[in-house]
Figure 1: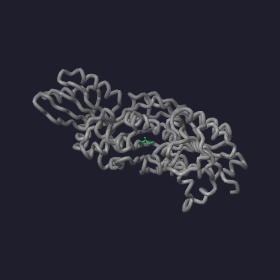
Figure 2 (figure 1 turned 60 degrees about the vertical axis):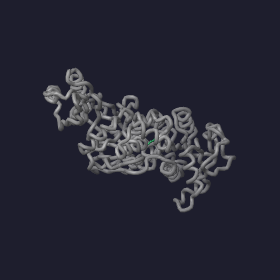
Figure 3 (figure 1 turned 90 degrees about the horizontal axis):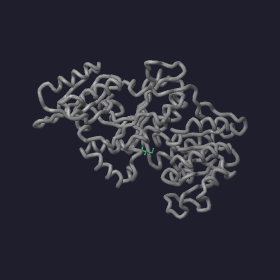
Figure 4 (figure 1 turned 135 degrees about the horizontal axis):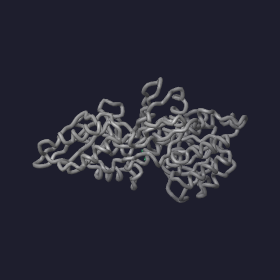
Length: 438
Ligand code: HSE
């Protein structure tokens, strides 16, 4: 290949240190690793103790100096956050440099802007590490599955919440207790909001949706429900009914009441969901992620593995660097962009209104334990054309009872109207939980 490709690293945290470790130890890896060289690294604090041995002469606190360094061909952005990460990515592209990033927040919001800029500049922006950590999912959707019509992607794409749910289920411990322990063990951030409120999963499903269906959706419109309000009793009831409780992110093609020919209607959302125990996603536990892709003609294919952590995420980042290293001579000679490797959108997509989304539902109601209560609830559902799959009374004590309803497939609009009417029944004290169900 001749001259080595220069790598500039923005960020030397967990992922950055993982990338630097791989690049420092090419032995036994693909020979292309020998053809790339880490030239400069932007860090926040020059004096911080590092997990990786790195020459202090490579370090700078000025990320723009890394981006603008002429010896750097590929900029690797692993600093996270929206700014300055977005501006540094765009500046790199402007300078004709390809970019590798793990930044799901930036790509979920500015992916289209970045893809357009990279196409115009004739460079690549690769994002394998942004979803699913070490699991190859981005390039398989872009390349290996590109002959399919994708119908649906559903996945467990947040390791922190899956770890918390797995422990709640196994130990019967409350959300708050497990969260505290997960934080002390380093499995959850000290500020866990992005993970436990489902925001991280929403970023990731927005990215997968854009690649699978060929057009971006508005990240801020994705209905998102996290696990922070989840009670242990719902995990217990779900288990007694034959389900595991998982935080699922889903994007799928749907029919719309008033269909628009110029845009593909999608239902995309994040919510705690009851998954039948024999479903492939039910057995995914701990920090692992899994993504189930359904397409025509492939049917179902599931991607499973470590969704976070230094090694797995760095594995995805380095794969992207090597992909670019492999095509770099072509880029230089012909200004040629491989259409499957570069991100592109080829149609418009939009989210259907939430009330049009069809799903099965799990609903827990706190009621009086009195004759006729189940009948009254059933009447309201019947009036709204909601068909009930099962209705079970748990935990009847003196005057109160808990009733759990699982519905057949109905629209969210029908459920919302039913729940409004049920709340008005004098025999119902409160609707205590509402989740999806596969
Ligand atoms: N915070 C993420 C998770 C890892 O818990 O899955 C990085 O995407």
